[in-house]
Length: 193
View 1 (cartoon, rainbow, N blue to C red):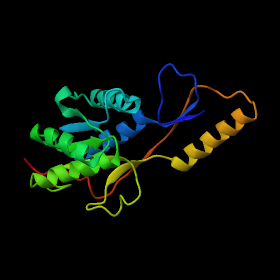
View 2 (view 1 turned 45 degrees about the horizontal axis):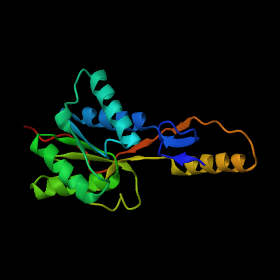
View 3 (view 1 turned 120 degrees about the vertical axis):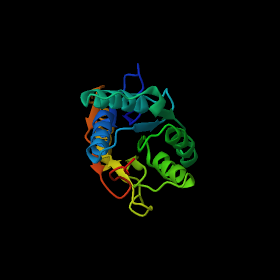
């Protein structure tokens, strides 16, 4: 057995994962470089380990830039468009101008939340997704998102599985793969206050 993007504590299986800390740091730095100061997160449930890692990475990224990520700028939701919309609505109520989401469906929900408020993405609110799912270039605006190296991760998982089938000992640690931030049209400098 090989776990993919699903590290489970206390299970002794090899795991292939995208480096969530790098993904959030790339997203955070991108929004800060554009001038965003009020950045929020839309994460999965609190027992979802990749979401936990993203939260820890966001807190570290904020600290590294002499900022703080307030608890009020963190929302949790199921990984769906509706979940993203509800969570982003709460963040927008708190004045967030940049939203980092733990999945592309959550990000599309954030775009919908902004539109329902009469806000424009990216001029009023910038949104960053995670996965670079198919068709993210076809959304309006095209979604800035973190691309996971799916092909390399898949090859590594197959190699580990084949080695296990052949009776070869495989490492039971976690192999982390570096993501890539793909900047598209859903992020921009924040509107002047």
